Each structure stands twice: as C-alpha cells, then as structure tokens.
Length: 258
Image 1 (spheres, helix red, strand yellow):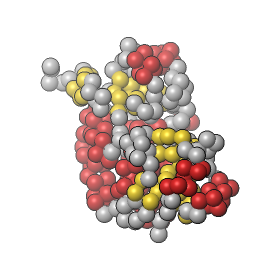
Image 2: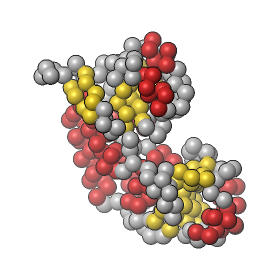
Image 3: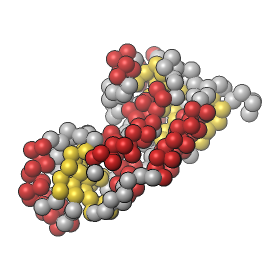
C-alpha cells in the first residue's frame, strides 16, 4: 500500500481504502452528517438524506438523495462520491450492496459508547481530520467520565400504535445504562409491546422519544394513568445520535433529570 493511501476496517469488518482523504462524500446517516460538519467537511459533503436535519444550513443547501431506507441510487451515482457513509441499522442491506458498486461504503454499527468513539476515529481518518477527531473523542470521554447518575427501571418508547420499545443491543440502551437506569426490555434491538406487558414489568419511568414517532403530552398522560410510572418526553436525538451530538448529552441529561 502506498504511504498516501488510507485504509480503515469499518464496523462490519470490511476494509475501506482511499487513495487520499475523501473529497466527495455522501452521508446516509443523520448523526454522522452532523459529525462531518464538526470535522469541517463543508466543501467535501456533496449529498445527504432528507432526515439529515443538522446542521440546518446543510439541510437547506446540500443535495438530497432520498431517505435512509429508500436511497435514490442514481442520484448518489450522479454525485460521483469517493466515499459513502452508511449504518447497519439505519440503511438497508440492499441499498448498501448497490452503493458499494458506486464507491467505497463505510458502514457503522454503533451499539455502545465505545463503538461511537471508534466510528468518530474512523471517519476522522477517512476525512483527513485526525486531530479534530482526537480532540472530539477526548472531550466526549471527559464528559462521560462524570455523567449524571440516577436509579430506577425504565422503558424507552420509540413508536405508538403499536407500542415499540428499545431493547438492549443498541446505542440508546448504552446511554440509558450510562445514566444508571435499568432498561427493563432485555430483547435485542426493538420490539412491539402491549399495554398489559408494560404494566406487568412495573417500570419506575417511561421515556417517550421525540423520534421517530413524535410523542406528545396526551400520550404521556395515557401511559402515566395506565401504568403509574413517571412518564417523561425526551429528546430522541440526545439518546440516539452518536457522534458530535454526544458533546451536548451531559448538559441535557442534567437539566432533564434534575
């Protein structure tokens, strides 16, 4: 391998090789799009999804290539990327396979806080922004070393009608546990659950996420009345956006759970 080349093994074990730091990037992952902004990749990001809402100036100015689950492959191809950023959970296997014929695809699989830090390091190298990545990782690690701590049994909701809740093998769960709570849902990823099943678990707290379903106070009132739990609407981005958003988490949770 020439000294100018970059080689990174992504979080699915695939080697990504670039002849130079990425010059034309398409990001299919909202939280990683925000990370690219932090890495000062303004002129290098040529395409994003319609769900990449941060930063707002990129949302209004960058080319959009569809949604996270239905990427417009031809639009991506027309943008001539030299790097595509995807995620195992947020993007479909079919889209990732099709896009791998267009350009190298870095696929993240972020289940834990350590996975998130590793992803930040990988992308900073692929973008030629190693020092910004190192500084970001150091700042996040310092924040997380003194994270606010709480107690209690929690169920974290992401969808209504039917109810869908967060299991134990995802990034949201890692944040719940970092806060000191016990996630009562032990299954993998996400599952549908009935009201009777929720009652049987006797949660102390129910967190209703603002995304992907936009829970409102009327949903909180119903669940509080039916379960007797303390029900709180929480900012879904603060629980699920791995990347530079992690710098804002400590302050948010101190305010939310004071």
